[in-house]
Amino acid sequence: MKITRYTKRAITGGIISLLIILLGTLLLGELSGYEAKVLIKKSLSGINTLCNTIALASATILALLLTVLSISSNAKSKLKKGHYMQVLQIAKLDTVVFIASVISFILLNLPITESETVPNNWFNYIYYISLAISSILTAGLIVVVLMLYSTIVNIIKIVGLGMQDHPLADVDENEDVE
Image (tube, rainbow, N blue to C red; front, side):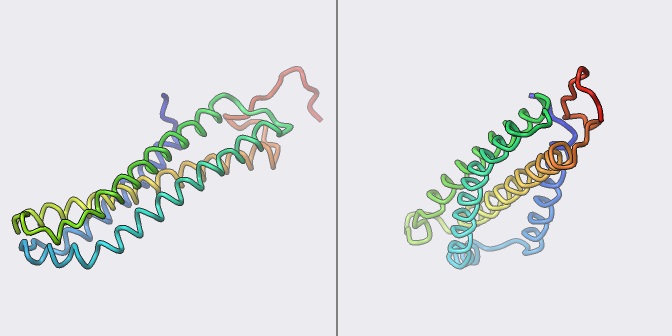
């Protein structure tokens, strides 16, 4: 699938947000196993809420994409195949983010901090992995929202404002221009 400049822009925004989130994690410094265990206990409810919120947002975006398709197909202005490919890219990425957030929610709900068989030094890895997962999910949702924003802006320009020289506008050469 071809990556458009709109998608590249959205991915760049996601990468920037991911780097900012991970930079905040690095500023915490190195933790001991016991400190990581305490931080996992304290941050777990927030990470679970984040996973739930991302899953809910992703499901809502998928439903709203149907509205985008309805507006696109019922418009007087015709849209090129590239527009529908953008919507398809959003739907695919959004589905991946949805599935990843639900799986992460399930995995992060395991009572790992209550287990006596897990060595203390593992909690460092578990803590940083949980932060990385939440950072990646957040960045993924940001990419989806930025891609959706670009698609909506294109629809507004083509359908709402009647822009015919837009790269995604399918202009019929046989129509009379007023």
